[in-house]
Amino acid sequence: MMESIVAHGVAGQGRGSRMWRAAALPLVIGLLLGGCASEETVPLSEAARRGRGIYMNVCVACHNADPTQDGALGPNLAGTTRELLEWRVVRGAYPPGYTPKRTTGGMPAFSHLAGQLDDLLAFITESTQSAAASQ
Ligand code: HEC
Image (cartoon, rainbow, N blue to C red; front, side):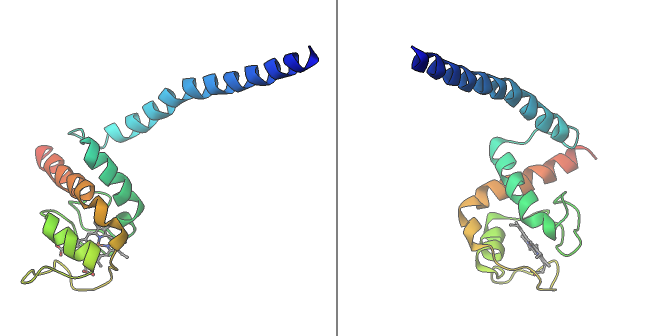
């Protein structure tokens, strides 16, 4: 008898905290989306949102948070193609015949991002379109 009360008590607590989390999650998501929405004139696709996550973690250390603007070390990324990302980000080089926007050479390769290039490109491309649309 005692055991079942204890078990119920614990199970009840577990449900309670899950319910709290379930209630808090939409709120947190709402805050995140609300915070970002003001910066965007055109909503980003799902791929671009994933790309933005990577960009804001890795690339923004040197590039501008707005990829259409020059950053402290890295140049603006307007017009970036899949081929350029492949070469610059994964291999740490430039496509044959490509003239780099800057030649400071401060960017290492991030070969572990090889599987995320489409997401990064979606973010860069859609940010560029969004900047053009708001002008
Ligand atoms: C440590 C600083 C640093 C980080 C982090 C960084 N970059 Fe760069 N990036 C640069 C610099 C400096 C250049 C220009 C000179 C060079 O190639 O090193 C550049 C150049 C580029 C270019 C070539 C632009 C052109 O047209 O000439 C692309 C594309 C690029 N970066 C994309 C990215 C992406 C995407 C990320 C994140 C995954 C990233 N970079 C992270 C510093 C950085």
